[in-house]
Amino acid sequence: MREVGWCKSTYSAQANECVETRRPVSGGMAVRDSKDPGGPVLAFGADAWASFLAGVKGGEFPSG
Image (cartoon, rainbow, N blue to C red; front, side, top):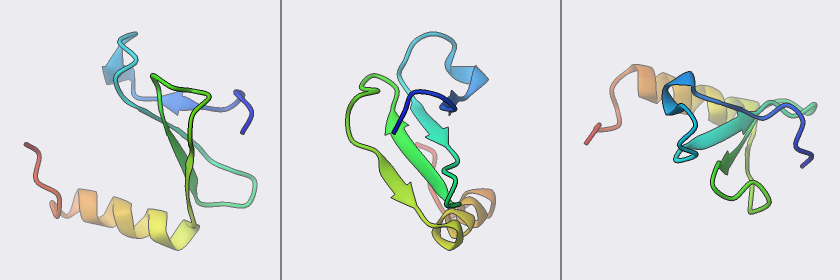
């Protein structure tokens, strides 16, 4: 995927220790490691991404 359009949280500052996201034209979400922008990209369909967000908002994932 091209470099244009990748976003990361403003909470990450410039540390590059987070994930970046990008919304592909086909929908869903693409995710990559900010330390390795040329590395692998995980691509999630719109339904899978919506389920993940609902789980995060619902507290399904422990924070630590």
